[in-house]
Length: 152
Image (cartoon, rainbow, N blue to C red; front, side, top):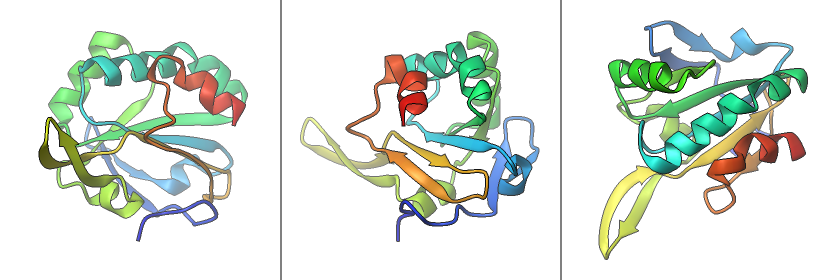
């Protein structure tokens, strides 16, 4: 069952690019923009990460912390962070456990071929760990995602 608006987010989110365990309680008292994306260093994912990087100061002023999630390895995440000077952590979810919990690991289709992949989705989680808004796959504007979050 996918996580919906009004649900409590899972307590354990996973491990970041440096092997540090990330828990929801690490963000107590802050809002969290938890964004799921398909792959490091692809055009849309890079545009989204850079939008969040460029708007990071404004997001922090609004009380948000940012955390990205994809199936990429820790090494890939570290390179992605370094190449684009990302000021936030990325969770390694190679087994798609967190993506399955949030309901963003799903069947996709490209040129008639079906495959499993990540639905680009952002969950806005309030200071108490409750999902207060979801920006779905058809709504995410990769080039202006930070402003999308601020307007929600």
